[in-house]
Length: 309
Length: 296
Image 1: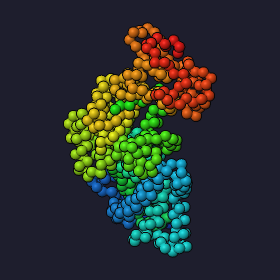
Image 2: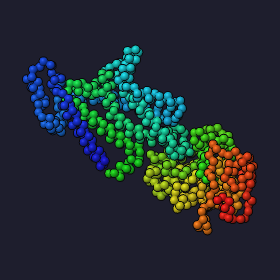
Image 3: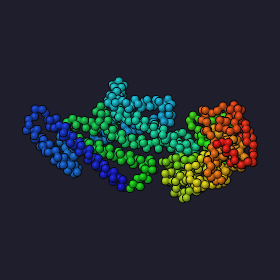
Image 4: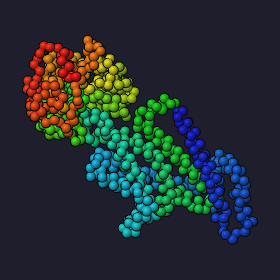
């Protein structure tokens, strides 16, 4: 179990670094009272709010008192509505989680099979078509694809809602927008790792047993080829969270991405910090999950881990 | 019976085996000839029938056993899969059969070993597992393509004994591919010598070693190190095997052959009486070692 505690410790350090960075950068980038309060407010009112939010203290004191509160589970309050920052953010988490998981599903369900097909029928017309689509898929900027989809499916065909959330129809376009680029990348990684695996000696053994092409691909090649794909997926989850901000904005999807854009714009410090902590936590968890999946996919990793512990 | 297939690197031994096993790489194809198993010609059958026949009656063991086993599947699973594919057994039967086979090839504690993975095995154990996988479903023919080349000498002997033992008890034929003539002498009944994609001489082991008819065979035999000739240079055959896209027009060995004539450069010699040569050596009683000077 040592490797888990080691990982957790490392995760905590990562989250602390992220938090510290965000804390100082936000405070150096402008005074929240200038943004939140109307321009014609007098200095006394400004000072009142500064004192109320603790912005009049030296940076170092602000930082230590924030950390102290954080350790007691207090994320501070939103400047905008005086609500608990964590509450404000947490409300939005399920929406973003839903969008993220749906996009990962799109990326895997489309990307992996296409990559496998391209590798098995390498250099055929099928391979070329799949790879052309993949290049197209990931060179297309996210926001552009989103707007394009809205134009086609909402304005022209009028079959899907252009913004908001609530029904499963609302999910289709944002998930497709966010998932497409990743599907394309997954397809490429799957293809190249699959091509490598297909040339391995054990694939010939499987063939000499009399296993059919489908059996060889699914039972023998895929478990081996998935290992690098899972690695890529783990790294890409962070990237995906970044793109979620854009996608949520395009589709007015009420997740933490959109909350983040508005919170940064209004210097709602506690909210931004809370979001960053949650994002960092998600990343760390995603990477841990990837490690667990490794062990499940590849027995060699299991042994290495046992040896480490 | 064990047929040994010998020849230097690149002469087509492995390709022949792959062709028999139906494992040729994508661009390879069988250009002609016949492959008869149980009286049926594999080349004349439809692809599907040929696959079924192959699955039922022949299997192969290759050089790199560790690479030949899937790293993410347990040994037992891999052997059981072969059992299922060849015999159509249920999962449970196949698992039991796999454990039995692993025991049969001399793995200690097969029940536990079946649950382990290739990286937990040594090279010799993996080769045993490969053999277990190959004899699943009692094949008529086992192709051992350099199956012992990567192993050290003691292991090599053990694996060869195992193959010989299985050949007797299961009644299989064995094609034993090697470039090691010493192994041929000990383990084979008949020998086929290959050169540049063709069999150039075919004989019983004793005859071949006593009186090679093809100059290439004699060259091979003469290049064997022997204890009596301590400080001499080893005899070699000058040149290398021609690649498949640059085969000479007549006898493929002619450019390297000390007995070659003009006829050899033009006519491809047919295989007759066990050798394919226009100027075969007479089965002279003179010892092979004396003639090495012709090649140096």
